[in-house]
Length: 451
Image (cartoon, rainbow, N blue to C red; front, side):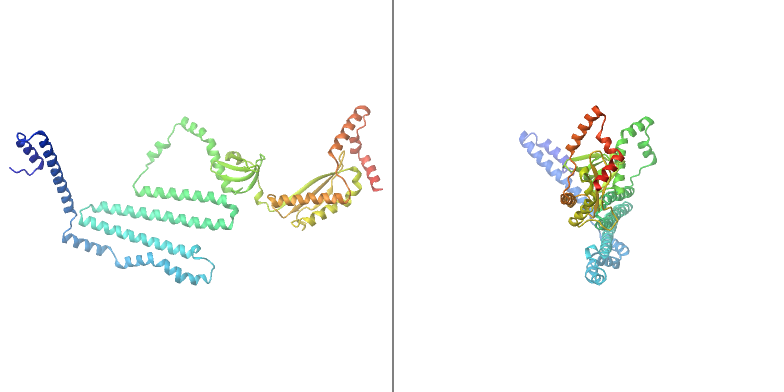
């Protein structure tokens, strides 16, 4: 008797033929029948699904009516023109007219930014139209749940537009910061940190909005359970993260206060000096002038004084000179010649009176006459130009001294006089240093030099 169920037919066939066939033949035939039955079952499922997907004339007519009511041909044509023709028209027809008024290039113009934004929004509109049409087809022709499909389509549209809006905000921000960096390259470090902070705000708001669209709710009780720690746990966490928080806040303060940027030559209050290699959230890297790199926690740098040498446009060269008492009569003639020699070899000298320009005899010491040379130049106090200029100043001083046939006071002579003075002080209580520091002796020596 025929069996509609393939598995029952297999069992019946095995029972009737077991007496006539050996075990190997039965195994092969059973395997073949299993394959045939599986194909029949799968074929029945596929055919059934295909039948569900097939649409009759009534459903097709209903879909056409629904699409006609939901879709406007004029809207689609308008969005298509905005998507693919707006940018070429603006670039090749409108922008040349503006090019006669302003000196912008197309890539850096606001017209390009506006047209690109409108074109992208129009393309997203076409995508949303396509999704709405797909919802109509699936809900009418394939018996999908219309409410569920509309909810999915609405969520997709929100996600699409929110993500695109965040992207366009990022583009606007990058363009603004790029222009600001071009105008003020010295503020690169500060602008970089502000840029990162704005990125964090944009990404955070975008993520929260996407979570809201996806119906991910965080109730007050959930937040309470996360942050409701006991007093002891709160104290332990606070103590453990105190240093990290201090470093983070100090790094943020240094980055936004514009005290120094990456690439600046700086000198801190603890005598650490070098070039800033990197400003991180927790630590700062300084490359010292001996090429060693020092990593300093931001918490240690936050309260220190800092000298940013890269932002100083003028420099000062100060030299302390020591002359013998035998040359005191020639000092008044030497000092103007020193300044003249420096002015002749240093064209960057500041001579308009806004900065000191002087060489003065400052007093009397025990074994020498001190002279201070204080001159200023329109040069930064770092780099090769500064060092070369300082060397020219030293050479000019030496030439002026040689011109007047004078000699600097020798440190070896100081030591010799000091030794003799100590010996005489021990034996005769007659200190040469005390004689030189006596105003009466100084006045008497000055009269002799004048003669």
